[in-house]
Length: 201
Image (cartoon, rainbow, N blue to C red; front, side):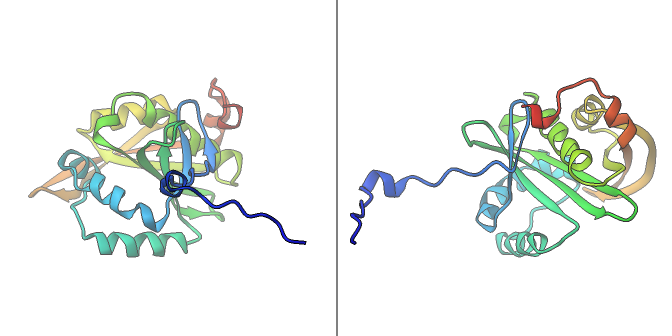
């Protein structure tokens, strides 16, 4: 028996397949970072404000592609694109240095400049926290940011993280030393949060 096969017209060929959300939250979804996302991430990392807040400097696109490939093969790190419901990418979030024996991991978050200050960072962080405590046997999450990075500190606090100290002069950036604010969130604190979970979104 021969089945009729429909060919795609020109308009359909130009349409990229929709990204699959690996995890959802109130206003955003998380999709696994792929190597093809390197150019997008490279543009965000080249933004001077973002680079300052992350304490990084721009690297080559090739180096970023290689890093994504390496991280995708790494069992102790998960990287996600932060996407709006219509699939528009607005940032990147990661759960790194996962130690399933000690139950610890670190969170990282970067938003595209034009999408900062709209609540997407908090929603993305809430979603990642729910993934870490709701699907993985983690007990403690940590995050660090410059002590002067008020927006990042506000996002962490809103998501339930507690500042537990300051690492003095722990980061060298733009010719001088910066203190890092150290935040953490423990599983019992997450359990006590009065908010919907990501799986309820």
